[in-house]
Image 1 (cartoon, rainbow, N blue to C red):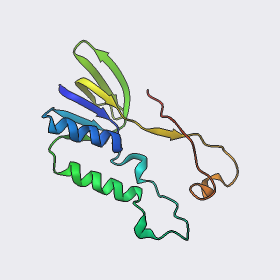
Image 2: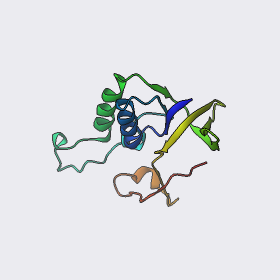
Image 3: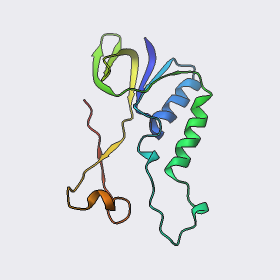
Image 4: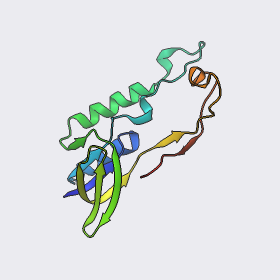
Length: 138
């Protein structure tokens, strides 16, 4: 059983993992990827010099370099179900694996509310942006 389980590999999840590890907790991070939505491409206007911008990919690269040297468990899986158990929590992943921890942090981020209009996918980041909405927790 882990001391702490973190669901989500975006900036919040990775930061939580770094702080918990430095406090010497036995940590498990579960996420289908590292970086989350921060890895998405950022639209840059033509009149903006690239050297003035920190992109999502830059942020993810910095996070990865911080966590790669830390020794802790990472599972590149998607959490499917969280259940409270007498000693803490049990998480089941889509792959059918089960993990237990005394405490859990849910840092799953947000999801876009799409308009479902013609040409939407081609215009995302240029003409169309999305508001944040909570990601569903299963």
